[in-house]
Image (cartoon, rainbow, N blue to C red):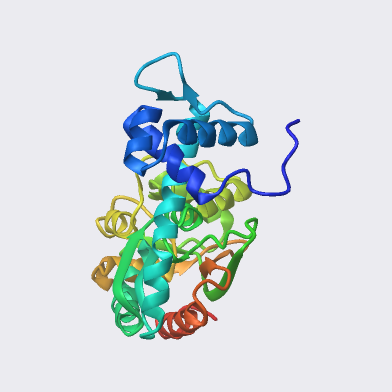
Length: 308
């Protein structure tokens, strides 16, 4: 097993030199671009390789090619250097009481309820605001790789350290059925419904879809796979069109904004399950902003019918 060093095996300057070699394909070209001597660049790259314990370049080809380890470091180093270059402007902007940029990920099912209020809330706190809707899994990945500052979704990333979490709301999973469809009141009746009518699924790429699928297995239901969608609108529109039924949530139904006469909702028979909506941010990086944003979002979701 490789022994871990108690300190970082690189500094930002060594990463800058490494990236310059990647971009130019030669030690000499990188040296000219950085205003250094070629021996200084070669020494820095060699020392970086020694500390990491991996060759970063294939020196048998010209121009130099990165190894697998070098490719991974290049990807991560680029993000680190870009982030470091923002520190100076960020500190200058805080003198004016506003952040230069805030990037928020918002799970699709909250877009209708929260997009406008989030934009208005953040407008007074940042010069530039980016609100990106999509799947929780994508937003979680972007938060961990610093492409997002905050996300509001279904996964609280409980296994990751260095994050702060604020619960927004809980909401039950319910049945959504085409209009005039009798609602099953028992698991046995639900099992018959599955045999008679397609189950319209949320995609297994979504956390909501994974939670629903786990519950279906616990109930012992065998539902053939027919249609699945990433978006609440996709699921709800199929049900409203009479093409199947779904297990969904009140906020997902609200997000679809379909005529209420085209569907009915009913409690899910058997054991009740719910999904938790959480705001997640990196620990203490944005001061009081995540807490204030969570309080505002929690109030709006409770008004929309979610539970606190």
